[in-house]
Length: 117
Length: 115
Image (cartoon, rainbow over all chains, first blue to last red; front, side):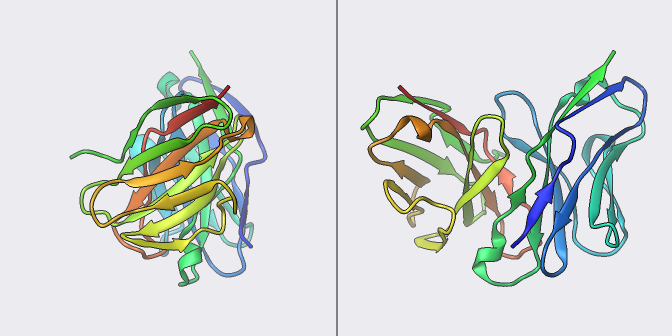
C-alpha cells in the first residue's frame, strides 16, 4: 500500500521569505511523486513531478521540490513567497507498478499555506 | 486548449434522488479518473476508466455508485439514492496515456450537496 503524510496542516510565512511545505511518502517500490495546488472552490493544478533523474525538480510559478530517497521525503520549496501563493497544497504518490490499479494517485491531507503581506 | 471540463459545478439533491456528474477529458486524453474530496480532507481515488472500460474501481463504494466512459461523450459518475454522506466535491482527472509517469490533469470539480 502507498501513503503520503503532510505533517503540517497550516504553514504561515511572510511575503518574500522562503517557504517549505513538507511531504513524506511510503511505497513498496520506487515512487513517482507529484505536487498540486488548490485555490478556493477550484480544481487541483499540477505544479511538478518527480519521475527519475535529478533529485531537484523545478515546476510552475517558481516552485521546486527535492526528492530525498533516504528520508522518503519530497518537500516543496520556493525561495521567495508571494501573497498569491496562499492556497492548499497537496502531495501525491504513485508506485511504479505497471498494473492498472497503480495508476491511482494517493494524496496527502493537504497543507494550507498562508503568505502574510 | 480546453482543460478538463466538469458539469454541473454545483448540484443539490434531496435524499433518495439520483446524481449524475459529467466529465469531459482534455482533448486527446483517453484515460479518466474520479476522486472524491470530503470536507477538510484530501482526495480519495474512486475509479479509473478508459474508453468503454473500467480499469480499476477499487475505491468506489459497492452500492449506489457507478461510472462509465462511453465511446462517444463524457464520462459519467452516477450516484443513486443519494444520502447526506455523499455530500462532497467530486473531481475528475484525465491523462494522455496509461503510463505511471503520465500527469493527471484535474477539472474544477462538482460540489454535491445532499439535503
